[in-house]
Length: 522
Image (tube, rainbow, N blue to C red; front, side, top):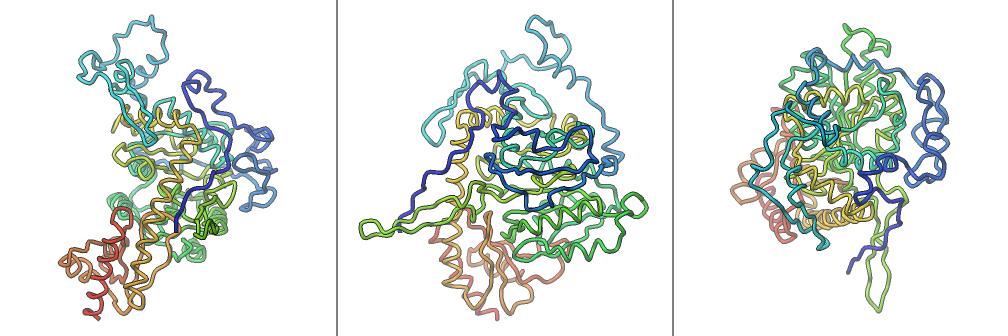
């Protein structure tokens, strides 16, 4: 069966080319069928009822399904989510001067910062060829900029593009709020995990209660555990977090307890809503609605870690057509809004911090991610960056910015669809191998996004010896499930298999060997 992509419906274009640098005011506007201001709360009265006449990507008139026709915005006390360590951070005088210098006229004389003289840099120019055969060229002037210090929040030209992207994809209700009251803000980070670690270090005090749904990405376990917080684990199923499990945990408190620090109500919920690592599950929109309402009721933040957002397999569907006696498989988008609604798109209070990453769709080695959230919190992250990494790689940011502006929206969307098809094909190959060799021995759910298959072996209470010893001796490398739980000593019948790199032949051989080992172990 032969597959080819069908032409996608075009949306209004994101900025492309150098004009975005000379007309930033244009790049920050949506070309909607009705003014953006009409869709958003008035900036000076956050207690008013907010009417939603209909928001959607490309201006499709649709009523949001996660709220009633009017919802009351709740005032946020952001100091509740800023610990003493973060509150004590101040702007670096050198960083402030450096940013002022960037805005100064060329006639200004600078004797203030210790930036290295670019004439000493050994790299003079570069030409990078991209997927379509076009090139990105760094001439000598651009190379000097790429190799120099830059703004801690991120390069302005990249931030402009990313802000426009977030507006088009998520239409955040907080876009026009006053800065002190949760206005949407963005900063670039050294990969999303760098940003998330800084978020945790901003919020968490020893002894704080934190909500995390299990199984969970091990990187977050190792980031949170040293902070000394109490981890309250929320159960999940094939549709993500189970709201009743979250309600059961929160029932220990009254909603008003959030105003009393001694009650120690949970500070935030951390979750990967799409293609959960390791389970491959995605939260349904109805569950997101329910979870967001619980966050409003008990006043906690939602940390929306979404590195697999663009790798959603249910956003495209196959259409089979008989052509010249052969079946032709054509992939088509399932709707005008191809990706699932996000917590950010529901966030009328300003209580969501969203982490995005280019690692899965451009390159992990570039180490470019970005955080979107309320300005009072994003500002604290930037202050942390000023004295830690100082800024993400200028070269990586410029490379990504040049690529995105050269692509425009059509090129960006084409890349997302190309990557998704690659991983969907890989997933299908692993599922075929699982059906062939593991049927009757194990059970699993088909991943909705991401790169992983979460497999439960039947009849085995714990698989760590099977996966870490027997399978490795047979040259099959997978990760036993206990790594994805805070209590790693508990027995676990699951393992995670990644389908991102292995060939279909390797997947088939690996599961064939594993099936034999399972039979020998039962």
